[in-house]
Length: 56
Image 1 (tube, rainbow, N blue to C red):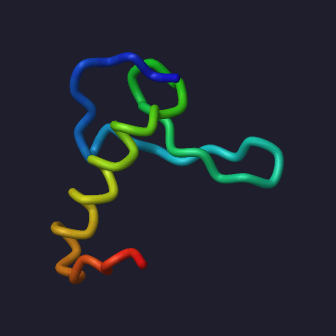
Image 2 (cartoon, rainbow, N blue to C red):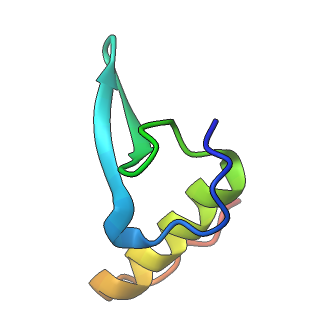
Image 3 (cartoon, one colour):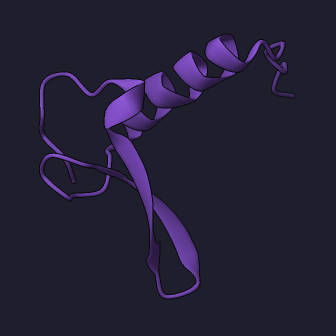
C-alpha cells in the first residue's frame, strides 16, 4: 500500500492486477490505501460535478 503523505487526483493512474483495475500512485507505483482511495473518490466526484450518493 502507498504510504505517501499527499496524493492528488492527477497523481493517480489505473493498472490491471489480473482482471482487477487498481488505482496506483504515479510517483511510487504502489496501490492506494483505503484512506487515499476515499479522498480520491471524493475529489473525483466533486471535480466531475456528480452528486454524492448516500450509501444505504
